[in-house]
Length: 420
Image 1 (cartoon, helix red, strand yellow):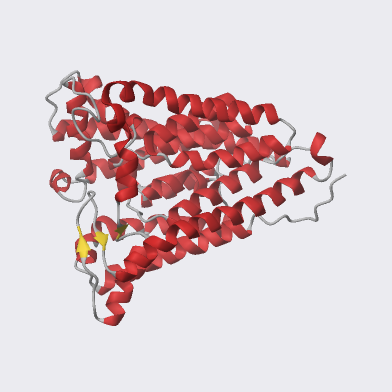
Image 2: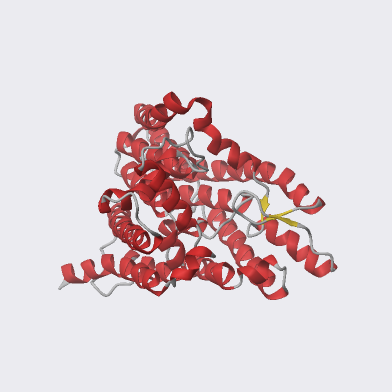
């Protein structure tokens, strides 16, 4: 009975995803879910023998091609149309969501064992239930964006890290970075834990595995495409202030209040806010990123010291909860200070929010749930800069800032640091 309940908990998020996929009309892939057409075109190009970066542009790192090409490998048909491609793509996403659920359950088990907690019964609202709730709010992003791949790889990396497997952790984070860059920001949380435990050789193993994985992953593309293999980096650098970001939301809100809506541009497969205020945000955001990581680093280091204090740095151990908390805070800094916050970015949050309990979980769930009203339900109205979507967007972004501050503040040590 308990095993059956656990299997149901693992399957439930994937069922939610598949229901969302079935409920998505085919016409949506010409409008709000047009990213899937982009994936189809890139996947077909590879299936026909074209080389990424050299023969066709790609705005993502090379491993992002895996979920795009997979439907062609399964069907063994380079002429797949969107109607067939979408089902194979969604099926692959459902499998990834099951893998993500298994990784989260393993992380929670390690946390419970480290804290001396006894796992609850089959009806406990645990990580599986929280992942299901989050899957409802993020259903469209989970089904129709490839970001579940880097999110799953990042989670596998955290699992390997708290399980004291630095090579596996570095490998998983390296693969995640080859898919969407952001998982690399989680590495310092794992490295700091190993460093303070006195396992400095594990820090070098972690860093070496991550670096080697990224280098080997890029090498084939660099060898055939040359410098063009790094155009995905230039693409991200050159992007403007996307309308759904925290800064973009504030810029259109200021225009609504002042009666002078800012101009919008439509490059980089996104809607971007132009004007003096948007320019000021673009200048300020990198400084806020550095400041945010500085605060997370300082508080995280103190939290790690507090974990080790009872037995001293030589014999103590950093709690898995600390590693997860610092990693989540690092990710939230990226999201809050990013110049882009598209619908798929909520997928990055989902694993960490699923590991969070109590009111902080429900705050994260509210952020995820408010994303679908912004895109796709009110997106056309947002581009027209109407009041309702602008208000909904800024409520969502304000809650994101609150969650980030709450998560960072929670890193403060709960007991005095006494090194002995």
